[in-house]
Image 1 (tube, rainbow, N blue to C red):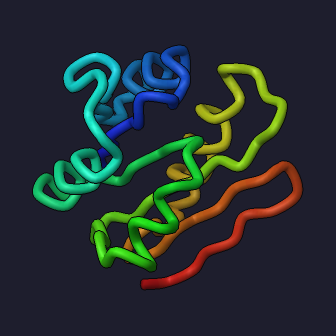
Image 2: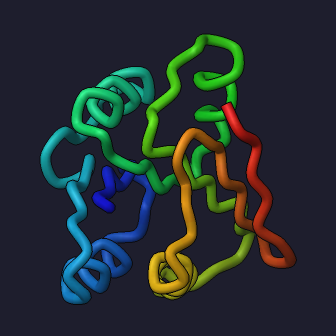
Image 3: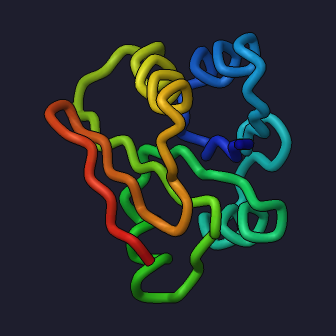
Amino acid sequence: MSFLANENFPWPSVIFLRENKIEVTSIAEKFQGISDNEVMKIAISQNLVIPTHDSDYGELIFKYGLKPESGVVFFRLNEFEPKDPRKILLDLISKKFSFANALTVIDKNSIRQRAY
């Protein structure tokens, strides 16, 4: 499983995941300033899961039909430390959680998925 970290995904989380042998391409590092639409196209062409804090991805999936097979993980966390997303993501990866063909929404109390 490989990831395409959206520009708003915390840099400490990107580094931590890489240190734990998770392949992560960072938009902030390689494609700074590109549109969400372009992020989706990269994820689709390279079969990458998108971790993001941007709610616009749901609209891109369900309204505009951009559906990366690997999935999108939306962190709906109002208050968090930059290390929090990495802990959640690494825990889900270790449990062999599948993000495929779904928008996964993570908030402080739950993890929900909407298949597409």
